[in-house]
Amino acid sequence: DVQLVESGGGLVQAGGSLNLSCAATVNSNNLNCMGWFRQAPGKEREGVASITRIHGGTAYADSVKGRFTISHDNAKNTVLLQMDSLKPEDTAVYYCAIRLDIYCIGGFDTDYLTWGQGTQVTVS
Image (cartoon, rainbow, N blue to C red; front, side, top):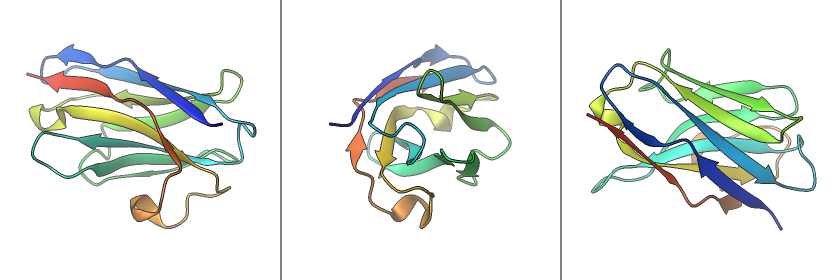
């Protein structure tokens, strides 16, 4: 079955950077859509970024545009989220997710099949 494992979270000062990784176990490494989501205490989960694996097309939430970059490494079968210029409001548990669609159509409101365990990001 599909499995996702996130890593790379931690504590950083405002303005700092973190690079999150999501290692995916899936039969078709690039025929899928993967995304990063986050959830802060007392708030609803929100989409952060997505990537269409077949061609690398990306989408971002307005709140992170220009600061976060989602990318993928098909050789390692991982998806990365480079987070720069971090703000305290970025503090949340970040989750990697996947859906077995070739293209990321429908935005963050579409159903994702499998979720990772999450990694904590704290910006002070």
